[in-house]
Amino acid sequence: MNYRISQRAASLAPSLTLAIDSKAKAMKAAGEDVVGFGAGEPDFDTPQHIKDAAATALASGFTKYTASSGIAELREAIAAKFKQENGLSYKPSQIIVSCGGKHSCCNVILALCEQGDEVIIPAPYWLSYPEMVKLAGATPVILPTSDKTEFKITPEQLRAAITPRTRLFVLNSPSNPTGAVYSPEEIKALGDICVEKGVLIMSDEIYEKLVYDGARHASVAAFSQKHYDATIIVHGFAKAWSMTGWRLGFLAAPEPIAKAIDAVQSHSTSNPTSFAQKGAVAALTGSQAHLPLWLAEYSKRRSYAWQRLNAMPGITCVNAKGAFYLFPNISSLGLNSIDFCSRLLEEEKVAAVPGIAFGAEGYLRISYATSLANIEKGLDRMERFVRKIAGK
Ligand SMILES: *Cc1c(COP(=O)(O)O)cnc(C)c1O
Image 1 (cartoon, rainbow, N blue to C red):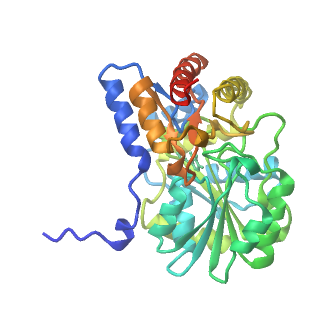
Image 2 (spheres, rainbow, N blue to C red):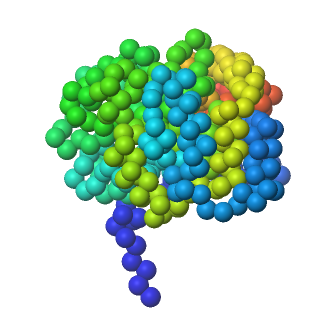
C-alpha cells in the first residue's frame, strides 16, 4: 500500500506537549503521586441544571439530526446573549453552533484562508491556531511578545506585520496560555488597524467571563459597524460552564461568512450532538449562579500561585488578569522550557506545559484549574526543584 500522507496533514507539527503529557499520565497510571498543572479545562463539574436539560432531551427522544448550524432555539439564545452582554445584534442565521470552540476556529480558518494567505497570530498562542492555518494551506505569521508587555502586541507591531496577503488576524483575549487581557482601548486600537487595512479578525472570546481584578472584556466587534463587519467571534461552552467534554462551541459572523462556514460544517461534521444542544440552551438561559463561585475560587488560587511563583529564586511571573493560567518566566534558570518541564516531572512529579509549545521559549504554563491543596503541594515541589537548579 501507498501510505502517502497529504501535504496538508503532513505539515502539522506533532504536539510538543504530548511527550510530557503522556509521561505524566503513565506515571499517574503507575500509581505515582503526580501533581498536574497541565489541565486546559476547568476542574469544576458541569452545573446540574445543564446536565438535567440534556438528560431530559435524551430521554424524550431528541436524538436525531438537527440543522447543521444548530437548533433554532440555541442560536436564538446565543443571539440574545450577544445582544444583552455585548451589545451586538446578530440574526440567528449569522450564528453557527459547532462541535467545540476549537471546531469553530477551524471552520473559520478553512472557510476564509487558502494558499498564499497570511494569518497574523500573536505569540504566546493557543497551539492549535498555527496548525489550523497550515491545514488550510495558508501561512501563519507569528508576532512575538514577552512578559515586558504583559504578553500583548502593540498596534505598531500589528500594523508592521500586515501585507497585501494578510487575510486574518487572530485575537484571543483573555488569552490561553498567558491569561493576558487586553483593555477595551487596546482592543479598539488593534481593531481600528484591521478595519483600516481591510483585514478580518477572528476574535476568540471563550474566556470572556473569566476575568479578575476588575479587568473588563471587550468584544472588538462592538466598537462600530465597521468593526462588526470585520469580525468573526468564536466562543463556546467549555470554559464558563465547564462543558469541555460536551463538544459545543459557537461563532457569530457577517452573513456571507456564516453561510460559507455552514457549508463547510454541513459537509464535514453536520450538526453538533442534538441533546447536548439542549443542555447548552439551559447553560445560556438558566441560572448563572455557579460563575461567581468559580471566579472567587480561581481568583484565590491565582493570587496564591502568583505569590508563590514570584517568591522562587530566578522566577518572575506577570499576574494574569484572565482565564486560569499563569505564564512564569524561567529563562534565568539556564534550562530550556522542555528540559525544565521534563526534569520537573521526573524529579518532583509535577506536570506543567513548556512555553515553547505556545511559541514562547523561556516560560511555562501553569494551569490553576486544580484545587488549592494541589496547587500548594505542586508549588512546594516546584520550589524545591528551582532552589536546587538555582543553587539557593
Ligand atoms: C479551550 C479553548 C477553546 C475551545 O475549546 P473547545 O473545548 O473546543 O470548546 C478555544 N480557544 C481557546 C484559546 C481555548 O483555550
